[in-house]
Image (cartoon, rainbow, N blue to C red):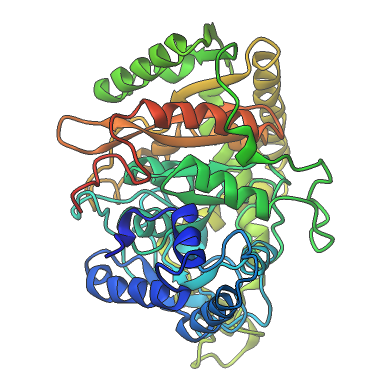
Length: 491
């Protein structure tokens, strides 16, 4: 019997190609597991069973004829609910998009399905991807499969939880300030932040357009490399998507890490870092040195300004982007309004949750007359300084190795009344988001109580291949790793 909770992309495709199983059987097995396990996790918001089984049947027909199978043939994937998938709900975790079903597929979704992937359904997330714990969803919080009393991280908490719990072989998430990397670390899986513009944003419900990125969440680094290769590349539907050639990320994993220069930024190892996480990251750095990497201390001196800079820029862009949700064209509309302005006001009041309202208000204030120069313009200037810090560091080293999160996953409800404390959960991830560089988080151990620890590997713009190569080496350091999250062998 195939153990689907530890299945990788290569293993799934191979099993279908050799006739060990079928794409249809694999999809059905995942739906059975979702029915059994997801009520306690709450990672899925909607299932797209008809679409999934139709795609699985196409893959099975290819296999039956002995034809070559596409790279993701029959691989069951989950899609974060801020991404458009034709005919499926797209709520962005918000009441204001209740009932909305996009008439088209986002580019990332379309490219993965064209490669043979089976789309199981839409996955829970913080409302409009705003959150660090997946407690801001209008459809209930997601629970961490490693400890159901703890958060899975956010905003792609559902995406990370689904992979960790065996409810999909891989998922798509989005990362604006850490929303792939932080939940991947909290759930003990791998997540990739591609360079800004590497993956088309067409079909993504926007939060902050200069920061939003789409990336994979997987059980192994190789699986992430496989998905990224298929999704990446220029898209005429997204004017910001890059024409920089896309390398073969999977082939790049075969290169040794010996000779690479690893930078350790002092600013990521200061006050507030959990001692067990510090010890685990330092051990990982020692292992990389033993594998032939050189290790060098570096400085990113403007890092302390990253959180305030991020929460000015991101909220300002959210204020602009979310103005389109007004109850006129789609989604929720207040029924007891007698004037247009009352309909706008009541619809947005009923449709948006507390965190989204908070960020809209912050962003509107930052953009308002008399404050634009003091806040938004100043934040963009600091963003330039942060980017220059990284460019200077990458003149000296090939990658930076840091903690992904300052603490292990915290308990549900622990930080909901303290927004600043919640924002600080992203203190090690927002800098890379502001600079537009790429990164990978992958498991590097567990705390004494069994909670996962993630290490973040950052690389310069469009150098995902090097970040993935180092992540692959880190994955290899984990004792007994064989294609599933560290510590999940017994599930």
